[in-house]
Image (cartoon, rainbow, N blue to C red):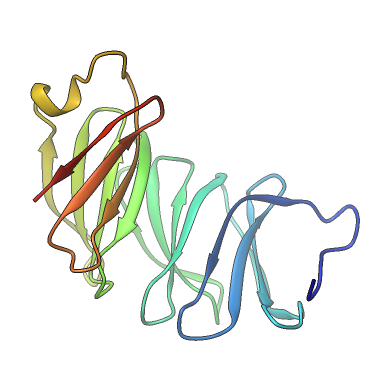
Length: 171
């Protein structure tokens, strides 16, 4: 064990490592605060970021920026060094259940409870494409919720997973 949080400092449900450094981001127990620690020592690395809505998922981009799925309704791109939100993606009306980024960090894929697979251009914040998953993929017997999405390492394929069983790979 390298370090642990003191009693009473409960972690929330999301965390992410920055691949370019030893920086760990994690949410507080109410998921409305993003904390930053140095992985090897546990020392605070940056001031915490307080958010309006709970954070459901954190992912570091290759350039060190932090992408958060906030309140399952929007994506927020944060600068961990300044604590400022650089960009908000989405209208706050989506119910997103999955998030991943391409290997180059330029595209985010989200999947929503509305069965929309969305591709976001992260440098501009624009929705590049939205695709309603067709019935032969989305209507898996016994599955009413698709829970996650993941890019292949070459970003040429995308996997969708269900919370019950099964999944699909798209090209």
